[in-house]
Amino acid sequence: MSTIKNNVVVIVRIPVPKFAPKWLVRKKMKATVDLYSSIDGLEFKLFTFETESGDFGGIYTWRDSASAEKWFNPEWFARVKRERGSEAYVRYFDAPLSIDNVQGGTPASTFDSHVATLVQIPIPQGVSKELVLSGFASAEETYRNVGGLLRKHFILGSHGTFGGVYLWDSKASAQSWFNDQWRKRVSETYGSPPTVEWFEVPIVLPARK
Image (cartoon, rainbow, N blue to C red):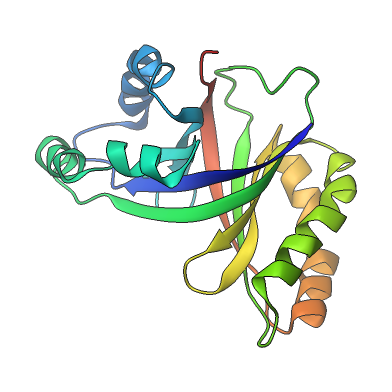
């Protein structure tokens, strides 16, 4: 199914404290599942480790920007700094169109095989937001038939980029899609190469209805 909304996707990264092994961070993630499953305005959360840096955090889908900003308030940033010893890196993306390829919606899980990817592409000069949104709609059917793709948010960045946040059933599925031919096609079509960020997803958490 797909939805056209005023959703906002927020990606949070926090450096893992040196004294905290990965298994311990995962344990603490699981301990917060009940909290995050019932936050007003939070529709979906992926608990994540950014592959390149090892930073932990999450990919949040919020009902709207007001809900996101209510949660990520100055007190939240201060608490993270106090408890984790590092600043949180938080990025907002408008998500006007979302696709879920799982019948009934992607379920909660704690399978380590899931991965997420963030793709960003500079919007070509002279291309309007309306044209980008039209392109999202026309691409929907394509992404409904990508093997291993569970969910995708079509996104607009605050610095003139568009792209998507993808949830995959495995790294192999993601790599099969993001191959050399894909990169070449994107570069030739939009005049700039894409950037792709990779995340391990130990916990998938839909909000309680």
